Length: 157
Length: 178
Image (cartoon, rainbow over all chains, first blue to last red; front, side, top):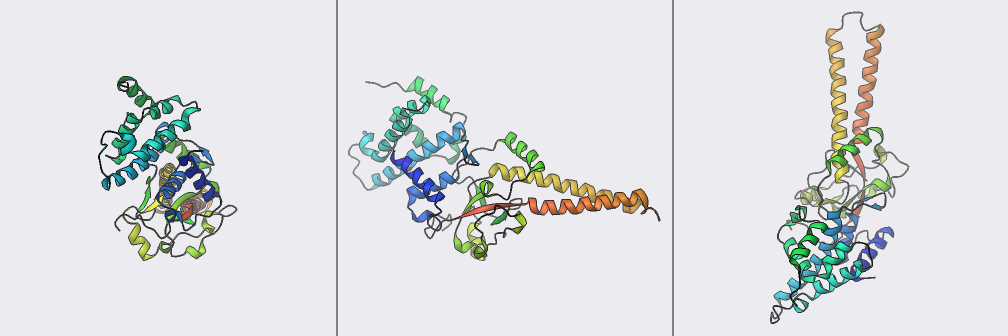
């Protein structure tokens, strides 16, 4: 189980066991965000009915949390290796790797493709920091993003 | 607890963690379904709200489960002065039920319109009736309309409310405006 899945799992368990009462924001930012997002999922009578956009948004949020951590660290760190995302954005790279693994064996090839190209995912997540409602743009769909990847996502080496 | 969903507290906010756009077709379907069955008092269909304990005046009256009760039996959430002030800038996070809220507004608006029509019919009879008319068919019609108006009034009152499950946000704060 990946770290992010563990967080969602813990959130689920905590909610079902009723042991988060009085503690949500005391569990730390990462877990409390996971709990609030879990509670905000599009579920009807226990059935998860996420739209394409919601599914994508859930993944982007996880990556966005990681990049926010990295950017916070960056303020206090030497920016020597400016061009190397594996050094600059350690948490993000770890999260994107987890996402790729999460989708590796699933039938959702569009998501897998997206997270196989960390630089593209990085661009997407960076864009998400600009404006809260960018996710409602017409291009914020897994099919459109994959089309972009197809056209612009070639590697140089 | 229960909350007035037709006229929620100022600062009740949907979409803090999931702001997907409303699907208007889904809202219309829900509003139509609410006419036949309004499932506003079940644990499974309760709305989730993230609050701080000190915002709720009658937190001691909160009940464990809404199942087996009617929405009028569930204590209506009352906010403290502190709570009312703090939630104003969209700080009362409601984590589910955005579509249901909009559908409920349509549903209650329809009921209110029906009630207004019924009252107008009663007023019309009152204005146009002549002495002695109140007996017979006209009297029966007045009685029917009065009963209908009473039923609609009760239905509107209970339809405005929805059961909510409270989650305590705890002491740490991410309140905007702090």
